[in-house]
Length: 233
Ligand code: 13P
Image (cartoon, rainbow, N blue to C red):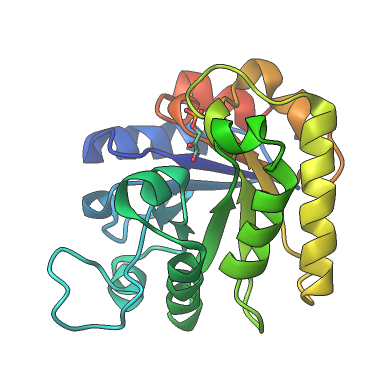
């Protein structure tokens, strides 16, 4: 079984989510499907895809205007939340430490965090890819109990229509798996994300230690998303 997670970012509509759930109901798959949607679409509706959010506050409650807590997300029906997405790290200053706190809040509310790590183009060009991934995992993933998911998203490949080589994905995922094992989290699923589409999903998911994918643009329309879900059954 693979995990196919969509990240709608700041796109879509509530009715579009209903349409997607209806379309997914006709899909024959053993895979776990998750849609991480804007906060206002999380309203307790159910369907074949479990619903997740794209961020959560690192605080429990209080005077944090505009933030949404993990307990609020859980009450609204979110089962997952993306933390540390590269766009949050880039535009909102989320550091590894903040990301870990967010993941801890999610876990304490019974929500599975999808913890993202990945290098920028500058870091890649400076030969720091593995270093950034390693510190990202060690510093962003909480120790202790509670299921988490880790997503490797090379930032330079997001929305760019290009992916790292299969060998580079394999190297990154093997290293992440080894680090998670050393943290007592050997069973953690590791997703690949960045420019996944129907045409490359099966090949990417056949790479060792790739337990699924985190999909941006191609998760918005059922015609693009369903071929990814059925790429490996
Ligand atoms: P794309 O699939 O559009 O490259 O986005 C990937 C992503 O950021 C998923 O979180």
